[in-house]
Image (cartoon, rainbow, N blue to C red):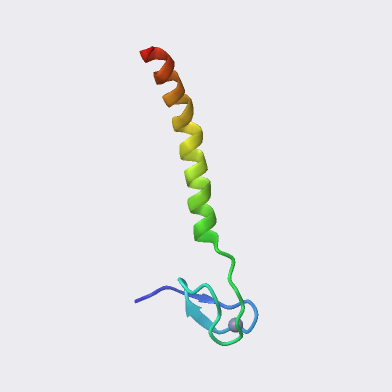
Length: 59
Ligand SMILES: [Zn+2]
């Protein structure tokens, strides 16, 4: 069973994965994509100094 979320514009329940309300056309904020981006940035922020340190260590 798929999770539901409520459209803040018309109040209808739509699948949580829907990017747009099928009734009124309201576009939901893409929080999942944003979280992925933040996760990627955090990952880069943590691994980049490690890679740089490793690069200088191996020289
Ligand atoms: Zn709607």
